[in-house]
Amino acid sequence: MARTRLGALLASVLLVLAPNAGAEEASPPGGGFDLPVDCAMGSLCTIQNYVDYDPGKGWKDHTCGSLSYDGHRGIDFRVPTEIEMRAGVDVVAAADGQVIFAFDGQPDVLMQDSGPGKTREERNGNWVAIDHGDDWITTYAHMLKGSIAVKKGDRVKRGDTLGLIGLSGNSDFPHLHFAVAHGTRLLDPFTGLEPSADCGAAGTSLWSAEAAAQLDYQAGGLLSAGFAAAPPSKRQMLAGIRPLAQVSAEERILVFWAASWGLLAGDRQSMMILAPDGSTFFRNERELEGNKAIWTTHFGIRRKGADLVPGEYVGLYRVRRLNGDWPKTVLSVRKTIVVR
Image (cartoon, rainbow, N blue to C red; front, side, top):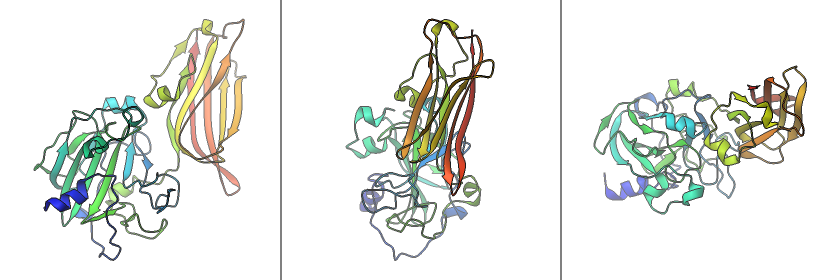
């Protein structure tokens, strides 16, 4: 492959490649790309961001929804928190091919701490590119440091492990950035179209039938939730908090927290804590004023002059969204804790 072509395709998985709207439609390898992650979609893994179709400063995903950001040119498969990342989630080859680039060595740090990367490797983190033949190339970015399991020149089969989901490069949450290119065109695997197309335009999916069956569009969901003996910070909630099974009544404070993604202006939050006797310990409802790619909240009670009543408390958090005249539940979670 010519050096100039490699430069165009691999300079960055975040790069907008030159549009070529008149190019002939081509079939993806092996009947379509499989999932690039080995995890249960909709529970352990979700799609945080899709390809951005908005040519201006805003963003729209392929459905004309808000699950993207300005200039995003791939699909972000995320795990809820760094706890799941450290446990290890495999990144796998989406189709048969040959590794044409593999890089490891970038640390797993939040971009808000390190600042945006300047070089290709600082932007992409630990990443792999695979040539599938017939001008099809896939890239896999932001993998965990020390996890890259292939090297340049290796032949891989679909499903072979390439590394682990990580937090390297320009990343603010643990995820895999997956991108598909055909020739010099970057394509959205959900539509087979370039980002220059109109959102909502009809296209042809590049996913295999098995992958497509696992990729229902989900507009918002829960990352994690639980009880705490003190108000957690947003950073703590997004990094991951180990489940708390019990607290002392003498603490006199009980907090329920939740982290979620993909919420929209007008979404209605319901927050409740039930006391051991079933009575309402805390209750509040709130409407979101703007779209929230990531949203964290915590609520609860601090008792003055008296210990908490011992027993099992129940925390409930629900987000509903108007769907016509009828509210649709976006997420709902129930957790318990014992006060001793």
